[in-house]
Image (cartoon, rainbow, N blue to C red; front, side, top):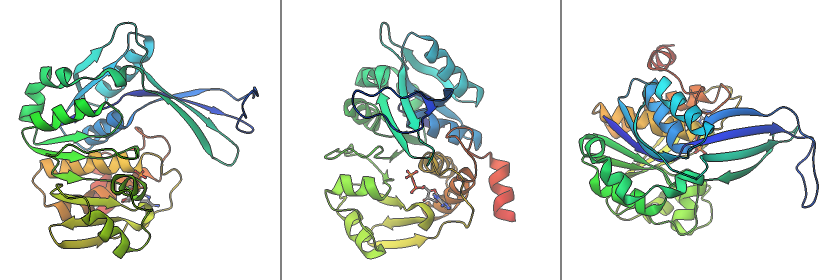
Length: 297
Ligand code: ADP
């Protein structure tokens, strides 16, 4: 089993002719809403790949809560440990997209910010039984630290979104940052070359292994003193939003199936590459059959 502790957000996406400046009202196009939040995206990615996934999180007591819980459940995620929070709105992301495809985003964490260590303790049974527990940085550190402490198996920590000065739980087995998140974690400028990335990742003492995702350049794996670069699969991306979430979900599934870190990272690169060829975060995640077909082609 895989336990994912994290956020659920309703993403509200509006096309705008340009981004508003302070004091300005801009008339946008029709709003489109998608289920999102890094936690939910990673849980859905893992479930679509055949993982048995239990989610620990919080939603509010509004209609958005039903949309998000139903969406996760429809993809096979066990939503029993998602708690409703009275008088608090469900997390939402307000996303304005201009004609050049550039986003400006306001995230209102709402109920996600109310997730507590006690919630994780109450969800001890999935956390204790999970082979892999997956964490990100869209819920309070106190909840993540409690989950990492309670986790019975391997703890995968995706330090996203980047938060300067964030401190991952001590008992993390595997850190999965992208370039920006690696810079935020290590307090160093964003690394460019492979050597710079290796040097920055080596500063992350405590973590058993580090997998740095490098977008179209693939991933860099660090285990002990050894490092390995795995190139990305060649695809023509249409929307790379959520590639990191697909990667983390797939990595968790492969590790829960006892693949080595290198095998798991290659498989997750395939899942993430497929996700970049489709739009949307949760719907872009491939199924297991799609990954196997892609690898066999
Ligand atoms: P994030 O979405 O968190 O910024 P990345 O952009 O590093 O994460 O992408 C995560 C993974 O998705 C990469 O390690 C790679 O395997 C895959 N990926 C992302 N962009 C591409 C691309 N252009 N072509 C192929 N694979 C990609």
